[in-house]
Length: 237
Image (cartoon, rainbow, N blue to C red; front, side, top):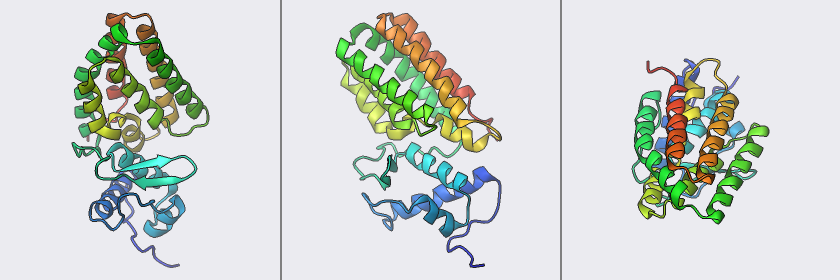
């Protein structure tokens, strides 16, 4: 049997995923996979590295979370242009680093959602509803909800009327939504779909408070959502 070209030594699954992230990230940053290029398909990566499809999916999710790539349904995963990549170049490879991001978000987004509850327009509220409907449709298909999730949070930032909230979240890129990707790869037996389902319930509570224009309830709902997201992460090893 032919040895895969870039075979990764057999170790624990989350270590394999992290090793794959490291190698693909280096190829992207060194330009061997250029901005705008499509990543090899899941099957091609499986053959090239000798890892399972589960490992490949976890690695792609981490690359999305770090803001290096973006997946378009039915088309594949593409390397983002440097101008689109996270300006903060956040590394989201461990539960520990994600906790730091969530702490940042707890300070930022609890204030943003309170302002959004006070200032949102009917049109902005309708767009938030659409984002959550899209999230639920993807959840029902057990597909990635990352983009719909991120869109919901960005719409809240936009509803503040303060462009700096939007700019900060945009600079964070896909690292805004890293929670379940890290948890799914580091906690044995965890369910990505179950985590997404819980997040959906929390999103609905946030939207109810925004619709009622209740800033205190909105702030509490966002705090609960982000706090629960932090608790859903695997323990730091």
